[in-house]
Image (cartoon, rainbow, N blue to C red; front, side, top):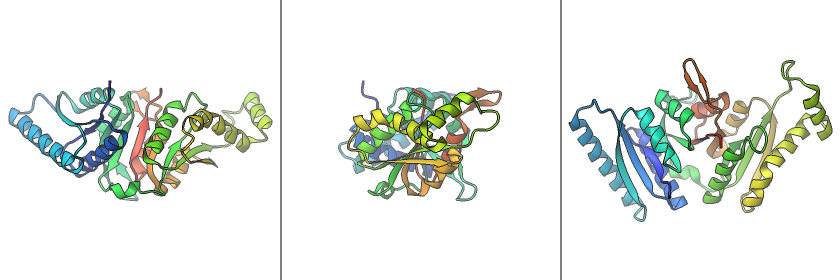
Length: 282
């Protein structure tokens, strides 16, 4: 089964940017593009007819720019969250628009986007309204966050290396670390750090172990290893202006007020100026 690149379209400026990003991605990966719009069954039928007409126009615009691209459209019944989660399950990636508030306040993900990211079983890409193809120019890196051991980061590194290979881009792999607190201290963990020569060498060794299988699999992808002390979200965002794409993993947790995507992913999707990919656990 060939999975498409699926993009949610609602006529907004941010969804239009997401549409063009998704079309370029589909061309890069030689995959079909699926354009979807979710609507409530309670809406009037003339509203659905307008949506179908808008989808057809949108598909025509995309095929005009990318004549060899296979494009399909679907009007999805049901609420947008459930419909988009179901669409993501059938996709290689799901692409959504994200509204911007400016450099100080950051970006607004919205409740729909946040719920979809927290529950989707496939990678979800968020694209800002101002995104342009020029931002994918050579010289701009793909930045990916790595946490934990090789198994913990396998899914996010698989995506990042595959994306770098498809774009012919360099990859910067970031591992942030901090001093253990009194609550996380254990003789065993510090013994491992001592064996490696200290905390920072230990973190560098952990990053090298996580990267090893992917460097072997993608030998042509240039990789910069970036180990820095600090909050993972802050370290990643400090590198955001040099990135054509940010890739982060998701640690979804359910709470009384709904699904959470984890503090690192939350920081990056709300504040990084580039498109952001949130990859679910393997």
